[in-house]
Image (tube, rainbow, N blue to C red; front, top):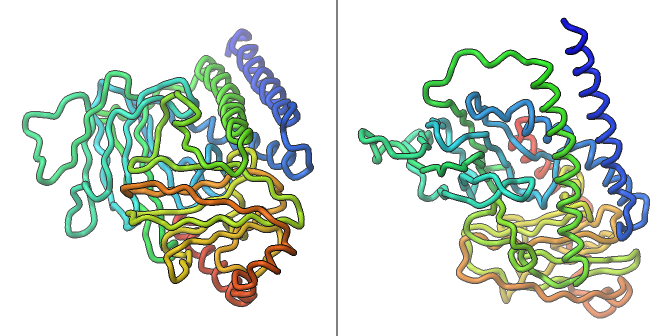
Length: 399
């Protein structure tokens, strides 16, 4: 190996480490909640997303050799990930054809989006969408999907699904939202470029250098982007608004309904009550996250609920209670030590999108004013529900 290549490899690594180090300044900028848990989880967020950035920018970034890989899981999150979800996808381009096939699974909500590159860390506008209810699936639960710039003349539309790409298409994403975590099964599928070569290009110093540079850039860009976005909600706490109401950049969105989001602040000794009547919907959920726009620990904490797990009252009202102490509320969400963050309601496949009413009060006032809302769930029930959630997570992520 030439000395020039040795120097290039060494320089690429040093530059990568220096840029990651500089990204840590975000965690201490003005306006960040100034407490130990927020700072620590922010630094963990940066570390967690190195692997995701490397997957996108170096390990699985070649549309000539695509792989279907998952994005988020309980240990790697950002951008308001849904605790019910399994997100996966692959790089593509707008010139080639790709065949995706496998077992569709049984997730209550299933959607495919093809998107273009754009002004956000997750690309730009969506150019094509296919919902699970519109997907052709055979009697064994398997499907085949062909994507490309133009439908072939001999295409069998009765057996094979078709989605058209645009010239700027760069990624295909699969969303699976699980209502019943324990019963619903995840998709198992793979992707091949039609006419794919048998061998990938050799991994050179130039490829390494470019990949590490893009990786460190994406880590900084993505974490800063979402911190800047959440500050827009932070300015109006307990007010529910959609992404589109505050941001004009196009981004890969969840088809069928825009999530509505509010920023919350709950000091120790206080609680937040959220009330809303859920609409008739294909799927709905409530997820809870920290300042860094990542969900709380949904492996060992009650940080979300949905249309399967939540309980409505006799009038069909969903009442969520957020408090640092478990008061035995039926639909309790745990802030996991955080005193501020975001909460998202997802109404998918609904004809309207109601916004919850928020009431913030002390725990003492909650106990005195709404005694019927607390002491409804005992410790054994909590433990049983958590064991079921954990089993569902293992099934979803095959871990």
